[in-house]
Length: 227
Ligand code: DX5
Ligand code: ZN
Image (spheres, protein in one colour):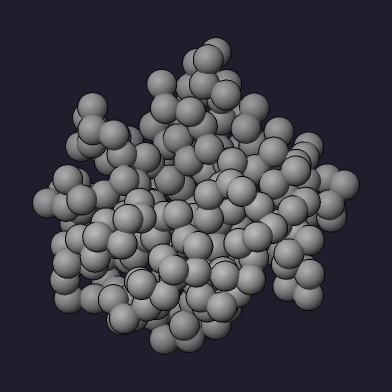
């Protein structure tokens, strides 16, 4: 079974000390660092750019999972790749040519992801499965941390799992992930869980136990060897 990945979203970290926060969650057991990039255009919020990814890169060895919520995305792919992203995910609606964007990410030597908004059907990635390393199912509308989990994401994960079959593609879920919702999406087939507020709540002394709680809840639904 694909190893479970827990990816803390630094959107919920203390932005005044992001380097320390990345160190803290990495030491607390994070598998990846999830970086939410927003442009105030594709989504109604503005966060960080390639310069911040580059600045954070020396603070951890674990993969940087860059989630682009920007449109257009193509002009910025090389910048994020050069800044230190390991995977780059783009929304299906971020440009007119999803296939070309995914090809470009692969050509940069990075893992490529396609992102489904809550209203985006699973079928929208059916014809790009040979170009993706992960499909990210949004379980909130993108733009902000701390929103409530949208339950229809569970059915979408199951549908995606069936479509992916035996292909080597991760199913990532992002938004409103807590131990409770983690168990639901893991049971449906998710193997990569993003969590912001549920991991960063309580400050650095709580990060390890917050990660363990999500990992244990998800692993319990995947079988004994999953974690
Ligand atoms: C939302 C972002 C998420 C968000 C998750 O647009 O893509 O990564 O930070 O935050 P929580 O876990 O608080 O919903
Ligand atoms: Zn995200």
